[in-house]
Figure 1 (cartoon, rainbow, N blue to C red):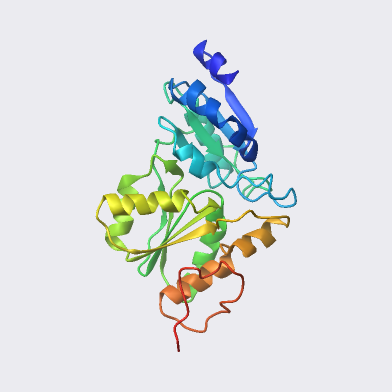
Figure 2 (cartoon, helix red, strand yellow; figure 1 turned 180 degrees about the vertical axis):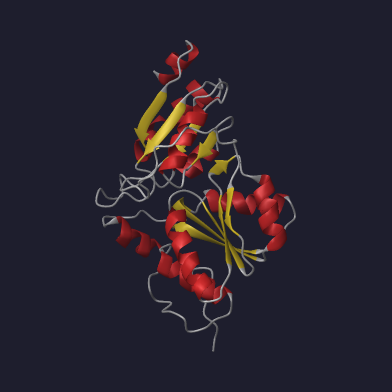
Length: 273
């Protein structure tokens, strides 16, 4: 229906739960993307949604949407970015455009500002650091910013970068990160199988960079019931796990319990000592 509207010159915003869009994957490809139609897919309840259980978590959209040619895939960090991305997506000749956002409360109250166009595929430098770079995508970046403040107070300077777009990636931003940092963590509220972190690894390999990259997000399992906070902890990309991961990457031992959950520290094993 949205494709038909777009063919006739209208600008449809197709609003569907992330998990329900899985059922329309073939139509997204053949009815919209193949024809480069101007349809904005607004994927509600993206990421972990809590008590609805495994059938309703919107954890696959970053992976399955980025695989479609002609598709732009964006995930805003806050309400202002969401408004500006929706404004940007309806401008002329943007083609198929996916914007995903989570269930839950917002982060800011001062969000009613004039619209601004966001350059497609352009991320943001939130802070520079010396030791480790964290590249986040979506609203998980808000908690990470607060964690970086804590680390700053401990004398650990962590760079934090908001990718904003999973497709296309910000090549300039990633070149800067890989040229400056040897230890990089990617964080996303989606499956790490084929998701944002995988896209970053693809960029690293294609451009002959070398770094220690750890992907944090939702593991390759179906996640059951629980609050969003409980499930984020269970999946091992909450701030406690991220904080401990940063510490361990810097060689600081015995900073936390590796048995916090089965997914935390999947890629950083404790030393024999």
